[in-house]
Image 1 (cartoon, rainbow, N blue to C red):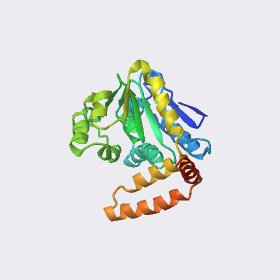
Image 2: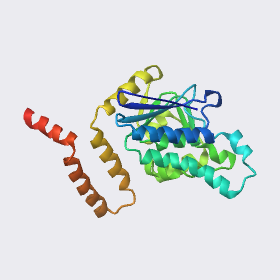
Image 3: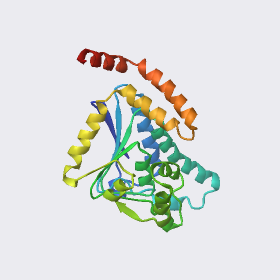
Image 4: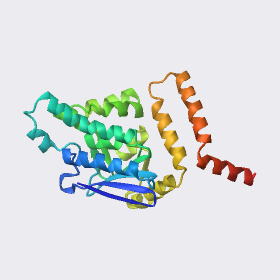
Length: 250
């Protein structure tokens, strides 16, 4: 279901159901949560990367598994929906940046998984979309993230039409961070990941925590949170060493 490795400060979580286009079964979702928690506990990890084996990143929910639960009650459906929501929250609250590297298609819950990550790197031929509406379904949980990433009208258009967009289009509207040519994707995404892993782990962690905690704050509260974040950052070992290096150079 999941392949996990950690080396040189980078934890790699690979969705490993290529025969199902890495569809999100309950077992895969559970394994993904376990892998994210493992990366959070590892003191050597500085960056987490989520990718998929085979042609596609992730095709979304395993519809065959959903069909088998069609007769279940509302509490059962709430439980299965909450399991994926917990993955989104685990990424949001993870102490390290979580990067989705996307080849092929990222659709429905798979697009939601990518969108839940802090950063998205995509190959030029990758495609993104929320086609749930075509099945009478709703990309419900990811809306909380999608509306923070895009303008309200762009977000509504994607979820109401269910259309797929290309990686360059997704980049143009702000859904993803980087697009690389297909034949250079591995090398350029690796360069990006390595550069991020080389940054101060404490500074990146504090920045991620502060940025996301500002959701819903008033301007005054957000500035006050920044005051505390600034003070905490000054006390870290990374900041002390960085200031010393700067002073020696000047």
